[in-house]
Image (cartoon, rainbow, N blue to C red; front, side, top):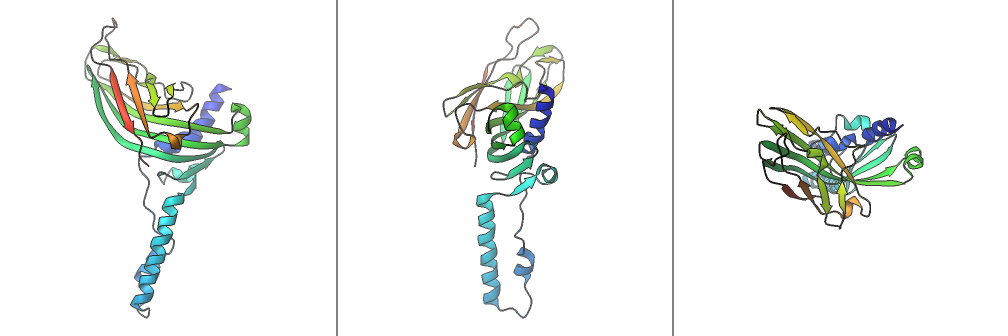
Amino acid sequence: MKGLLKIALFSMLIFILAACGSDDAGPDGESESEGSNTETEETEDEGSNEDTEASEGEEETGEEMSAEENESTDASVGDTVSSDAGEMTLVSRTDDVGTFESGPITMDITKVNGVSGELSQEMQDYMEMEQVEYIQVDMEVSNSSEEDIIFYASQATMITDTGEQLESDMMLSDHIDGEFLGEVNKQGSSFYILENSKAEDVNSVTLRYDPASNSDYEDLGEELEIEVELER
């Protein structure tokens, strides 16, 4: 049953793996901007102003799309994606956080997102909650050594500026095996379920990773402490 729940939740969460939202023109942007030759310059200017105001309104409220539509249209901050599990709204995102090293391990944190979700009735009954609030961390990790290295990228502790100390939800998160057997590359996402905060209230998070070690559990690098400002 837990496996089925994980599949359902991933169908709900998957949209936030998108790298960047696309820029959409207003519904009548092309026709109004080009106009006919018989229109006066004043009329064209008024039409342009109306388009700008409409576009600004869309940016404030965000767009709504289905999970299927999101497969071809990336979600941006403010957008809501609907699936059978509920409606998920992307409230914050920081892309390309940085590259960090601990011994022979190199880790790229490609994205950190804040998401607020309204669960469907079925998911509410199963999870015994109406909403879900979480922070997602996407990463790519590689070992530059031919030796076997241990580094638990998916087990970082998160501290939020709202005062929460969280461990990643192992049921929802990708399992990034801590054993790097030679020069291998791994990637995945970790999900941190907020317990006492809303995603929109979290402005920054700090991630703490244990140092890389060898097969004898001898440290080969430094502990990583990474602070991320969440962008709106």
